[in-house]
Image 1 (tube, rainbow, N blue to C red):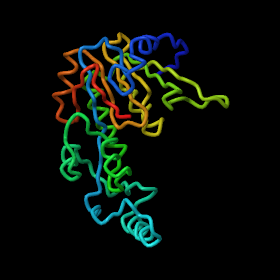
Image 2 (cartoon, rainbow, N blue to C red):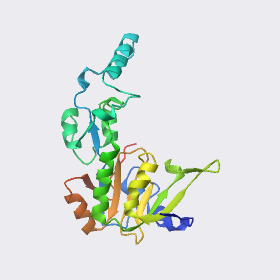
Image 3 (cartoon, helix red, strand yellow):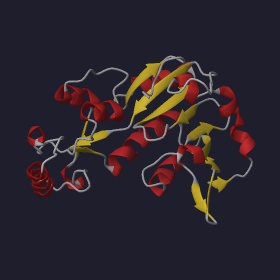
Length: 241
């Protein structure tokens, strides 16, 4: 993977999106693709944690002390479960436990919105994330020439010479996993094929990737039994304000 300083390479993205339609697919990816697919990043759960005993609305000193006791008992740190207690689950299974609809709008944001807090029994595992990325890489092709772009405005900048700057790298799609690890389990703002046949967007603070691509690749992604994904139209809202 080599660094590139010609940022005109990514101009086609900013010129192709609708700047005035926040939260819609058209605000995130150019309207040049046949299909747009939301790919959920995997979610993990501590199934042994009795989450029904947990209080999200601790206000009194007594309630706060009970919350601390709960955290200590089940290994919760800063609101996050212990990694060694986690196992992969699906959003479909999770929707039943949380009593929320399983449809194209389910994601980490919809889960957070239930109690305006993140459930302390849910988290992520790097190795599970990598498995998901490898599935995407294998479907598309590991050696596919790919650009990786980080936009400061998305909170994806590099710290360099006491500044935070945009960055652009060129390599193969297989290098996505290395970049993901180096970025502390975060994605570039965009990564796309050199021939612009497909493009991924990772909206800031969202637990999914949005893929724009042709019909053939879309069918392969949607047929994967390993990925949880949903197809969207160009003008559909994918992020709630």
